[in-house]
Every structure is written in C-alpha cells, then in structure tokens.
Amino acid sequence: MSEDAPVNTGAAGWPDPNLAYFAVRRMQTKLHQWARDNPSRRFGDLYNLVYDPAFLVHAWERVSTNRGAQTAGIDRATAPRIEATVGIAGFLGQIRESLKSGEFRPVEVRQVRIPKGRSGRFRKLGIPTIADRVVQASLKLVLEPIFEADFKSCSYGFRPNRRAHDAIAEIHHYATSGYEWVLEADVRACFDEISHTALMTRLRTRITDKRVCALVKAFLKSGILTELGIREETPAGTPQGGILSPLLANIALSVLDDHFDQQWQHEMGDAYQRAKRRRNGEGNWKLPRYADLCRHRHKSAYADVRVMPTMVLGPLVKAVSSSPISA
Image (tube, rainbow, N blue to C red):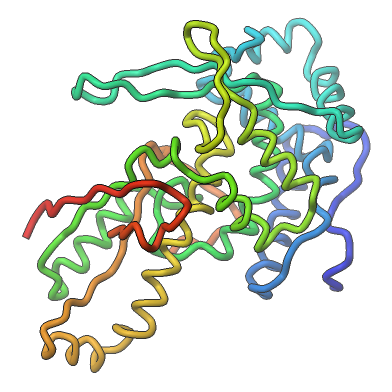
C-alpha cells in the first residue's frame, strides 16, 4: 500500500458499539502494522479517523463505562445526564460536526486535589468535560497503535497488555542474573513539567497531519480552572486525569528509553562487552521504566505482550530525583 494512500474509513451513520469496536480494532491493527513495518513512516492522513463514527462510538463506550463517567468537567455534564437529555447520537453528532468543520475547541479542565498517599501532600488532577474526554479517547485510539510500534520493551506504564507486575518480574529476573543494585529514579512533577515544544517535536517524528497535531496542542494549551474558579494557563505539562495524558507522557519519556536502549545495544549488548566493562571497573545496567498511576488492567488487540539522567531528558522535563533503594 502506498504511503500516500488514505488511512481513514469515511463511514457514515452510527454503528452498533460491537461493530464499532471491531472496525476500530481492524484499523488499529493496520496502523500498528504499517508503523512497525516502516519505522521511518510518517502518517499524514489521520484526522478523518478522529471523527469517524466508529471511533467516536467506541470512544463514547470507553468514556461512558469508565468509573469517572459520573464526574463532570467545568460544564457539569456527566455521561448519564447527556444520555438522558441530548442523547448519545445527538451528542456524538455535535462533536463530529465540530471536528469536521474545524470549530472544535477544548475547554479548561476542572482542577481537583486528591491526597497523595500518607505524605500529607496532594496530587492535582485535571478533569476534562465529557465532550473533551470523548475526543481525547478517539485521538488516543488513532495515535496509540502507531507509537506502540516505537515504544521499547523496558516501558511498562500506561501501555496495553502491560502492568506493574511485569516490571517487577523483570527486576526479579535481573536480580537473579548478576545484577546487585536497584536504583530508583523519579521524574519530579513529570506531568507538570513536560515541555510542549519538545513533546510536539517528538510527536511530529511520526505524525505529519497538521490537524491532528493542532488538536493535540489545543488540549495541551486548554488551561485549568482551579477550585477557586481561577483560570490558569498551561505553558507546560499535560494534566493528570486526561485520557490522552498518559500516552503523551510516554511519547515524551520514550527519549529516555531510546537512550538506554542504544547504550545497551552499543556498549553492553553481548556477554563479551559486559565482561570487559566489569574487568575495567565499569557497571552494566538495564532500565525497567514504570510510570505512576497506570491502570491495573489495560488490554488491546493490536499490541504484542511481551535511571534517569537530566542530560538525557533534556528540555522535556526540568528535574530528576533518584535514590538507591536496595543492594
């Protein structure tokens, strides 16, 4: 298939949720396959998929069946309320038309604070409106299979068919294979500090569709409405709580995974290289990365199941903190 060939369905009408699910999965499988077969391929015709009826119906199913469906954004609309008033077809029809016409604009997220463990501190969450959640979910359905083809196996958070137990299992494997130290590293305020410019540059390595990039940027710049009703700009970061935020964080942090993977391949890729480094008093290491707040279960049909220096992250985030946790 030609790279310039369209990759959108262009379907009309609202399909049954089950039919929508399989239509979306088929297209995701194709996107993933095209991205995996050609690592340098850039996708330039994706926006039509974002407002494709099957994608919007499936996005609605994800949003409306999520436990946050009864939590409202700044417009105070919940999924049950939308169903009872305008109806699903009418609601999705409005979203589709605004996306097609280019008039869609995300609004501010509603900021709430939740306790951060037993530390006495609070984590800020941003709650988008239901309409914005549906568009984010549809956008994620389009982008995720493409970037999943690029993400390294060391990354476990926010990814389909991956969970915390997998990261722990990898650590156990290396702990019984001659590795003696575990270094825990944390990107401080990662969601708050991600550079929009650096993130968009990373996104454009795969996505050339200007409308898709503009939509992602619009969500990044949509702003926050605080608990006091004050609007704040968002010059950096991607609010925790948004459906798209975890994927964007992984796209940003994939630069870290790529660095460690290249380092491993070039300097520690075989037993001879690792033995030589040990003789020279140099260490060997592997990076299992798990992002915070990942869902307990996250499955997808198209994906295969299978310590952070600031110089690597560069402009993506501002600070990194780390501490050895065991020997």
